[in-house]
Image (tube, rainbow, N blue to C red; front, side, top):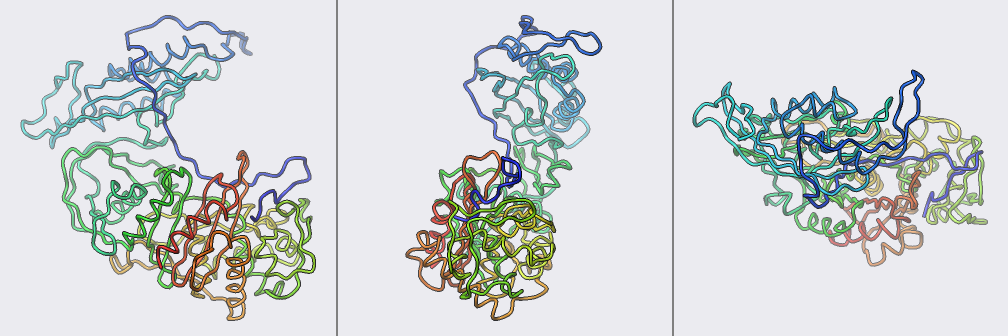
Amino acid sequence: MGSRRAVAGRRKTRPALIGGAAAVVVGVVGIGAWALYGGGAAAEENGRTTSAAGEKVKTGPLTAAEVTTAAQRFLTAWQRGDVAGAAAATDDAGAATALLTGWTKDAHVTRVTLTPGTPAGAKVPFSVRATVTYGDEAGTGAPQNETGTPQREAPQGAAVSKPLAYDSALTVVRRAGDGEPRVDWHAAVVHPELKDGDTLVTGEAGTPPVKALDRDGGEITAAAYPSLGTVLDGLREKYGKKAGGTAGVELRVVRGKESKAAKASDKTLLELSEGTPGTVRTTLDPELQAAAERQVAGKKRASVVLLRASTGEILAVANGGHGFNTAFQGSLAPGSTMKVVTASLLIEKGLASADEPHPCPKYFEYGGWKFQNDDEFEIKNGTFKASFARSCNTAFISQAPELENDDLTEQAQEVFGLGRNDWAIGVPTFDGSVPVQDAAPMAASLIGQGGVRMNPLNMASVSATVRTGTFHQPYLVAPSVDGRRTATASRTMSASTLAQLRELMSYTATNGTAAGAMAGVSGQIGAKTGSAEVDGQDKPNGWFTAYRDDLAAAGVVQQGGHGGDTAGPIVAALLKAGG
């Protein structure tokens, strides 16, 4: 349960409680609906309006003819190598020119055939078939004419070539200013793996490949473990030059400023000649990784992480859909799972005690917002343990007047190691964020909404800290491999606070909102459910974090609903498998 329908503002609609991570997904439709020619019929006129300068501006929905003609113009020019013509067919000629120029000059792509599919509204899918050619000297990868003959000959025996084939899509929009139909320019039009600002480069790999091993010495591949594609990319970026391998020749995505800010790794699209991989051993357990893959299979927006609590070793990580690594890099409101951190703060400050009476009213107003519990329940004459187990929002919000604006931030950073951007696990991660806020947003942060952002790795670490009493930074590659320093906490909870926090989580696992999911999980257990509302979603994101003996795990199912019903069974299954 938790923070579902938790917040309402002074206006009629609730304030935005945002938590999410976007990923580009390009749909593929049937190919061959129409062919590419040098020109095409003029687009139907749909409607016009007059601009401030007196010019006629096209308005209204795009017609099928306008979509077809604009897409045809762009694809025909691109296929012929007419960069200026293709760029002029987009709504951002500058950005299109740069990337399409690099398509030939830097990526060395030749013999291009673009085959459009059946338009779906303003969206037109298309297939790309081409050749990537590269050699070792100045003539390398020279542009070729339409027959495929090199315009400038590469050194004999030096060039390597491989076919390139994939599917993409474009969308036609009305250009701002004159309303003319143009291709809505984004880098993903050229290749679905590209984000705006990324480039394509063919050449000797910037980093040698790596052979990733599990903790038992078995090889980890994306074919065996589909969720680990982005993890393998991260391992190569971090350890390729350190693991003793030699680089091959490949076509790869080189990340731009925006992608690097999101900690995205470069990605190999096509290997023209093999390099010699170096070896990197990870902490992943092959049986538990396989179990994690099974748990998220068929669930496009489910993510889970399993840790060894006493060390921080990551034993399994999986994401349904196998795209963006939400488990490590997601930035989502964690909902009521954040109450574990908040509870530790309230207990330490003497504002709550597990077995002492604690208010849980239907509503509580703070900072101009009216907060409420799921289904507007209340607990009369209850204890803090009862409020925690049932995930009473107002039990936490009611303590906001007694707190300083930075109290939760300091608790998260100093005790749980969150929000400092200093984790070094071996691949890119987002380390959580608990910003200092005031008034209503500060109160909302106490129940994992407001500005708080986490991912399953962060929340699995929270449960691990409760289980062991000390923060152990999670890691995928042992620090001894490269001598890196891991993050540490500046203080620990008092023995009394820790004992009460364990009591709260244990009671929730056996008698509270987590009891259904944790049924059958034996040993020393504790858990917390969460539901985080996100504007624009019909259902909240379902969260669950728990521990069993020396294992700690957390999961999220985006738009799944209550965490106990969605993420809970995934987490519980892994805790059982680890036993």
